[in-house]
Amino acid sequence: MKIDSRQVLLTVALGLALAGCSGVPNSASHDGGPSADAIDPQIAEVIAQTKAIDNHAHPILAPPDLDKDRDFDALPVDNMEPESVTPALRPDYPPLADAWRALFGFDGTPPLDANSLAALNQARSHVREQQGSNYSNWVLDQSGIETMLANRVAMGTGVQPPRFRWVPYADALLFPLDNSSLAQQSPDRKLFFADENGVRARYLKALGLSAVPATLADYLSQVVSPTLEHERSAGAVAEKFEMAYLRSFDVSNPSEQDAARIYAKWATHGTPPDADYKTLQDFIFRYIAVESGRLGMAVHLHTFGGDGSYFQMAGVNPMLLEPLLNDPRLRKTNFVLIHGGWPYVREMGALLLKPNVYTDLSAQSLTFPPHMMAQWLREWLEYQPEKVLYGTDAYPYSPTMGWEESAWLANRSARAALGVALTGMLRDHEITLDRAKQIAILVLHDNAKNLYHF
Image (cartoon, rainbow, N blue to C red; front, top):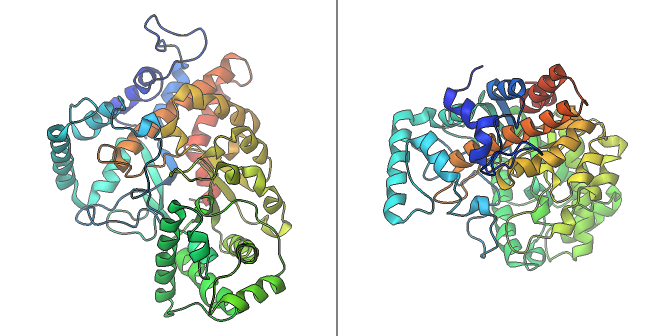
């Protein structure tokens, strides 16, 4: 399971300086970067040699369908109002140069002018033409990723098992009624609910329906369960909720009778009051979670600060999910709280005590430098090392950072942070070297392998 030698150097100890990591205490070099001993070399070797299972990403289809692909997200964020963008997603982010060089042999210094961007696209096109329908697999190889969980509305050319495993979206099933009132809550949600209406229409069409049934019982039996069953039979390993963009995590436990009454009243006409609609959503969410467990699929929830200037951070506190996670009916359903819950990273660590709760490093591995992410990663590993999963959140963020560059950069950062965390635990005599190596393999590969029964 060797990774290309370039990747070994870019990953972990020697790659930390390029990743902008300050290292661990008392190991800084004279120029302010980490010294060569910032990570134990034996831990570094295991991390560099272990191919990863990426728990969360948004890969793009391979040629010839690459340029027309829009199914990489149910809620694409490339047409929203301007927002404050983190440094890692800005066009002048220095590490972009490392990714361009490693992936496409392109030497350029961010930010790129129009001519340099054209040259980068030409270099990309050359590699894509060489790889053809194998291009998406090739991208995984460059980042030492064995398997990537593909968060997509539908799979397609080049993005197929066994290298890619499907994670479709369930939010459209959560909002079956007139969403016009919810869409008025912010400019972002106006766009998002239009997207969700489109996804729901696709689901209904696949079932031979043009509208939702008149009763909740029929909606659940004729739409929700068949959709989940179809996705499972098509290879889905989990159902993804982006509900953090659409509402809070405060999921109550209403009766089916109350939910059915609300559904029947508003299914065929009118806009439901927000409070009534939330009651219905809460019931449907628990139903989907139970069904996912029955079918052997995990439930994935976005738990992180989201894109868009109207994202409501208070509603994404994972502690709001605790009553849901304590529901005995849901103990056969595994919940993966995607992106590690930042800024609620300590709360996330506490929730890992729940027997069916996991988290991953996706998005954090791109947003934060390794030395910063390593702080709470170390807490999690000291607490529940079998519950933490590697992830990138590879995504087509911008003209200069596609899913390829973001996968490569996030991979380097995640491995570096893992190395810093484990080295600190080793040097503080919390774990042995053998245990550090075991945990590295667990996080990068085996925790996900065991969770999804790969």
